[in-house]
Length: 263
Image (cartoon, rainbow, N blue to C red; front, side):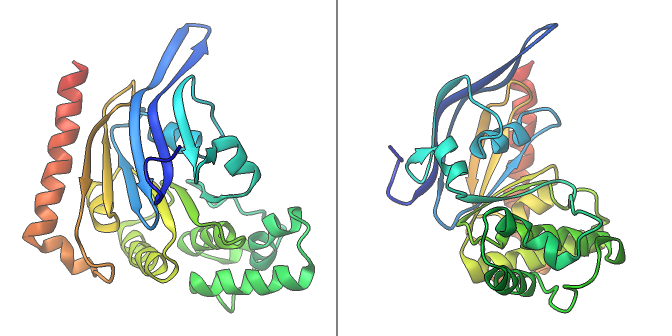
């Protein structure tokens, strides 16, 4: 059962071991975590620590080999079958032969939603990410940042309460990344979605999150869970405040402690 009535994701003593030709690979170990409704949770840690693997376990794209996980009180498999989440990958993964509108509405097409309803929801999702007016464009006609916004709109199109994001801005330059961080915060404030977000960037994790999950090197363990108390309508200038720098310092110290623990 969930840890509380507001728990969207409840993970207890979760572990995952991959069996390979060279022997077992211990990806996750003894993970306990609760993500509550309306949280924006960032996973941060060194490369290979299991951040994406943990996100994929939540999405039921990987199966845990130990422990328990529930999504809204049901198993991860049931949540996936119920389409309880939207997933945004590192790359936009848009089909080049489909217009932006038809890329965004592809999940609805698979769900056999009527054409009229698909169009309505697609326009609504594109408006949320400020891409209204680009419905008939093709992916190659959009910048990288706009393509990633289209992939976010696709994840929003079936209006799931949980949004899973795997380093969606990692390949973008800093200026575009800052702009999309601001837009994502506005989107979160407007929709009150629950967000789980993977990143390698300490400033990005601190700026976006209501809760930051610091992970150790493989096998991935949770070193620290840091709650922030920033207003939802915060701007980029908050990154210069003592409160922001204090949280960033704690994240950095947690990452260092994780490396020391691993040694």
